[in-house]
Length: 450
Image (tube, rainbow, N blue to C red; front, side, top):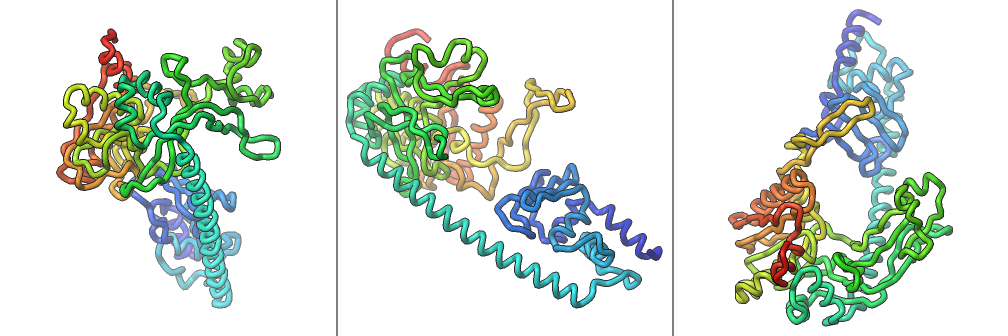
């Protein structure tokens, strides 16, 4: 190579992946180091990823990657770096410059071939994306139909369901029956877990369950929340179910799931972590952008929102006891989980936990990173729906979760609410450390000591 080309290549090798990305048409979002996106070469949704801090890129679709911008450019443009003209073309792409006259130029024929290949890939990627969208839409429609079927098959006003709400929250049974109009009861709801030998979803148990809807901002059902119950099993009043853990699978133990028996699982297996408790709360359909109505109307200007149904029902019980008119004019809702309550986090603003650390692969203790307390401004619609008509919003914090992690989420929930409903008066009520509102309020209403 001439000195001009030597310098050209040396300059290209110094270009970082972060610098090259926009020159190659890769749109980076925010300032986060980790970026995932469709691959310009083979499509997908997030199969192409790069890390601007580590200066690495990879494509899961083509099982290729590297730690230089030149190789990334070659992959994106369909160039072969083993061929000198195409290697130089890759260098020019990362620099945003034409190859110097002293270098071997890609022939017009080869350039036309590369363009044709790129167009063919783009057409195929668009076709594949359309196929995936159709499949995803078909799945969502089928899942939504199942959700509607489960919810509509449930029975309203069942005392058995109201007993669970009372036991967990202190909300009197007669108030549950009057105010919790979206609550449904299914005496024998199937519990699905894992797959059978043919690869189909496995029915491991069925039992009594509460079913409530996830609704969007117009009140349309988009999913359901299911809670299996056992009103004779304090303190959570939910059944005990076990399933094979990862450790059990690695140990080649029997893939079994369901309620315990006299012989299964053994105490030794439980102590060894070979079987583990299964969740007795499940969501189906979509929760993102949805909320679970516990009592009241979406049109109310005052909202009380928490993670779980029980905490919200407990707050309803307390407000009914103190100010019936206030309670009757309030919308009480559950977000399902803290992620849907807080919404998507900004890429910036992550911080180190003040005292929790974890040991990395090299044995170095590093602080555990907490999610940003700031919302992602371009993803505000991913949390629960909050109409601009809402003037007062009360969040119910959780006192028995990790406090720093929870506080970061609740700060983000408040900040998001102020962006979604400008002018809203938003606060968070925190229970005593180590407790949740359902426990605290239920005991207070019954005159019990915490």
